[in-house]
Length: 375
Image 1 (cartoon, rainbow, N blue to C red):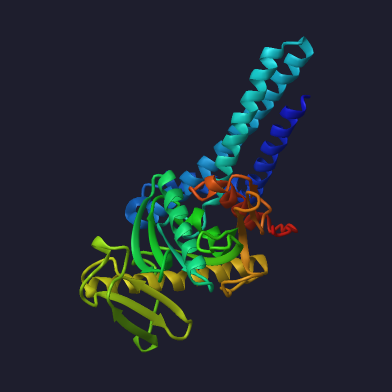
Image 2 (image 1 turned 30 degrees about the horizontal axis):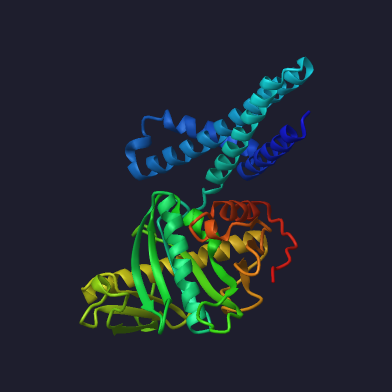
């Protein structure tokens, strides 16, 4: 078989193996039979919420199982076509088969990622915070670049983005910002981006044109609804009000309407300055605090299942999850999965899906790779 065809086939088989492992194939088939039987029960809709949960789970399982079977069939048929073409010396038919495998590999990757987004809160909207690390203007400029990168990524997926909180840098960039990203599976995709991001470049703020290394952190947590009960004691909260800041225009208020809430026991800090009403900003910030605490619990559960736990770390060297090098060469490398791009401009313009897909897959397999950071 052609080497190119074999490479695509291996990629497809890897995606199928991960899908079967994630679904726990035999268990998933039995569960789908159970759900189909429940759907036939006329009493199911006596409890509408429970019925909706059943229908949602059934749809997800059915789609994942059918997608896996469809890819398996198409892979077998296409490989037979290529083998036949090679035996008959039909180059055109063989080329057509390889093109079909390439398209099937892309579809298998897309279906794999979709199946991996079945966690407890993966379908939810998400908050995404960006904070500049130590380093003044350099790190603050890098934080603003990250804010733009995630905004562009969200727009590529047709998600809606709202700026919830914004703190301008002293000379350029931002000290921090919080985005609300609304769209199906927004949290599921973005959750793998939490961590420290490192930038290496020739500084536009250095008159000597020296290379600088900057750090900023990203923190992602899901939007939750009233059905999830998170208890918070008012006595554990420190609430501050301040004047909203921003790049100008609608982002600047003339009253102390912005609200910052600190949950003293955990050290979690959230803020909202989206509305001109202090009351509304306080309600929004409380919702964000509950979401942060819920995300922390989800992380603990996932870590317990995987046998690991990594808390939020300082924003600096040794803690980065990804490095972005713009000079003297062009490279972005994920230090968890090894996924690399040699087009940083594309990545910074929102081309993040390969990094997210690999990180999601790693959460299922639990496999770690030795990755050397870039200089």
